[in-house]
Length: 82
Image (cartoon, rainbow, N blue to C red; front, side, top):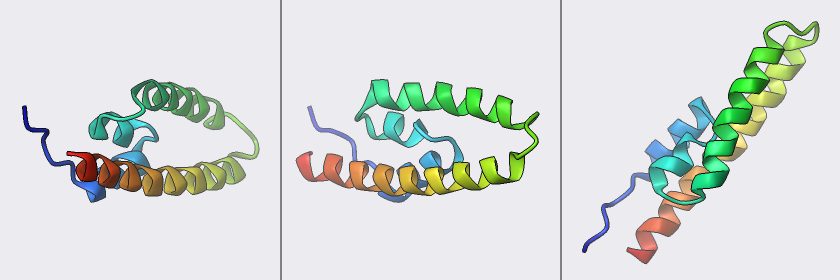
C-alpha cells in the first residue's frame, strides 16, 4: 500500500494555528499531537482571564512557531520514508 504525500507547509500551518494539529495531519507523534491540542485549549482558556494575557499570548505564539517548524520537519521525514 502506497502512503500518501504529506505537504510540509500544511503541517506547519496547522501546527501554527493549533499546536499538535500538524502532527495529526502528518501521522506522526499522534499521542503527543493530541496532548498538545488538549493543553493548548486549556492554556487558551486560562489566558483569556489572566492579567498578563499579553505576555502569555507572546509565549504561546513563539511556541506555536516552534511547533510549526517541527511539524514541517516531521512531514518532510514522513515523505522521505514513503
